[in-house]
Length: 208
Image (tube, rainbow, N blue to C red; front, side, top):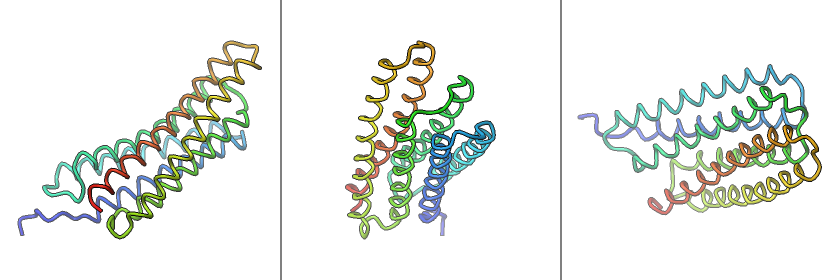
C-alpha cells in the first residue's frame, strides 16, 4: 500500500543480467586469446559490454536507494553488484593493455587463464539464476561457488607458472613488463570471481 513491499524479482533479474554480461565479456576475451585476430574490432565490443555492465550496476544501485525493504542485506546487494562490474572492468583492462602495449600473440598460458575465467562466469550465471530461491537451491548454489574456487586455484598455479616462464625465456625486459601486467590483470579477474563466490556462500548461510 505504501510502496514498502520489495519487488524482489527486479534485483534478482538484474543480477542475472549482470552475470550474463560478465560471461559475454569473458568469452570475447577467450576468443581474443585463442584466435588473435581483429583485436581493434573486439576492443570496441568489450567497450560496449563494459558500458552495459555499468548501466546494470547503476540500475541496481538506483533501485537499492529507492527500496525500503530489500530481499538481501543492502551491503550484500551493493557488494555483489560492484564486484560483478569490476570483473568486466578487468576484462576491458586486459584487452586495452594488449592493444596499447602492442603485446603481440598471447601465450598458451594466457589462453588457459582466459578459458578458466570463461568457466568461472558460466558457474556464476548458474548460481545467480538460482539466487531467487536460496532455501530451495542452497546446495546447488554452493556447488557452483565451490567450482569457482577450484577454477581460481587452477588459475593461481597457471599465473605463477607463466610469470616464471616469462623471466626464464623472454630476453626483452620490456616484453616481460607488458605481459606480467596483463597476466596480473587476468589473475585479478579470477580473484574477483572467487570473491563473488565467497560472498554468495555468505548469502546462502544467512538466508538458507
